[in-house]
Amino acid sequence: MVAFPGEKEFLVRDIRIEQGRIAEIGTGLAGSPDASEIDASHHWVLPGGTDPHVHFYDPGYTAKEDFFHGTAFAAQGGITTIIDMPCTSDPPVSDAFNLEAKLSVVAPKACVDFGFFGGASRQCYDAPGYPERLAELADKVMGIKSYAVSGMDDLWGALDPWRFLGLLELCAQHQLPALLHAEDRAFVDAASAAKRAAGLNAPRDWYEARPEMAEVLSVLSALRLAQEAGASLHVVHVGTAEAAALIRDSKTTATGETCPQYLAFDTGDFEEQGATLKIAPPIKGPENPPQMWDILAQGGLSFVASDHAPGTEKEKAGSDIWCNSAGISGTGTILPYVFSEGFHAGRLTLPRFLEVMCENAPKRYGFFDRKGSIEVGKDADLVLVNSQEDWTVHASEFLSKGKLSPFEGRTFRGRIALTMVRGVPVYQHNKGIVAAPGHGQFIIPRRNGKGAKV
Image 1 (tube, rainbow, N blue to C red):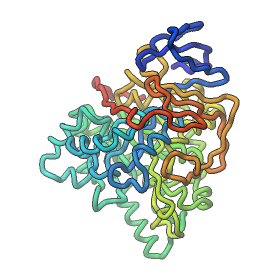
Image 2 (image 1 turned 90 degrees about the vertical axis):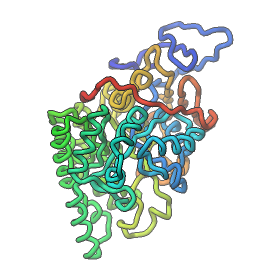
Image 3 (image 1 turned 180 degrees about the vertical axis):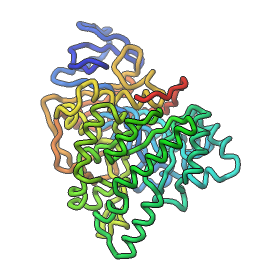
Image 4 (image 1 turned 135 degrees about the vertical axis):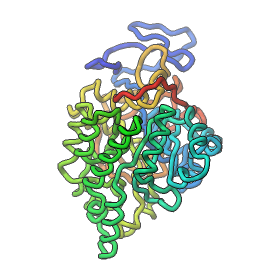
């Protein structure tokens, strides 16, 4: 049973693949005598998922994750395309030279197809010649990412509103989406300093230093600046329903994404799980998850991303929340979670599930001509989900280096049985990765003056 764009139900169809692309869709199709066949009986067949927000830490910080383990985990979870963030590697993707240096290291490791975001830190922005360096990146990256508040300010500093306006103007000039980590720096810095000075170091203190209001203030500012610049803004990892509603109701072309962690958990879970659930922006109050699901279902947020950024067990250990690493291992659980708790639980229709997990990120970033749906002429990126077998999350089984998960022990409907990238099986349940590292290809966007919300 196959999921096609716009169809309300799965349809029984055959798919013929030639040279890595979908050549024909129909019933009763026969392959050539030497063609291999895959029996997908008792499976749901989905287009490969896109995870448009991961941190694979490669090169430079590979004790936490690397491109082989990260893309292997993505394939394990039915993700066939990832987009890696610019700042958590050495070198960061801040100019074309650094991009090529990073690409030379990670491409031989990739199990699935991948793209890069470029980045703009305060240090990059202030360096002479930055407009020219951004221009050199423009046709190679999916967008430009910056931070309104940064946890690594000495190396990758946040942009104040004046600098962010300048970046938005540059992005508009080059038809580049401008991505923003949206938390208000003045609020977060003052609240964090006060908490730490008082000796408060529990999970709730991390949340109270970066509450819903910090996200709302930053989104309000960013929307107004994007309107001034005529830029295409995208707000990453939105966790606050009020902030999501601001993006939804904006008269600009701004879009937003959320993550499974903001749909599944609230501050009570954070207090219970501690550093395993420490992320930035933090998990929010209990009123947010159901409201976030509603906004996502109604189209107010464009898609779901993992913000995969695992910390080591040592970085997650200890009782001082300020010292624990922020981030979770999520690229391999995002599609199974949204398929089970979104589509099967009745929160998302099948067409909406396909939009938020497969279609809208490729549309937003300029590669929907190749990826994101099961259609003739597109890459044969397919995922077979066993309809007769559920599965329980055990992070020890993750192909990622990150072996901690806030979803530990949860059961999802449907087990990923097979993941194909451009017609080649790359992951099989009970076998693991079955394609050679390096099968994944670097993809670049094809832009056409887009900017409309998706």
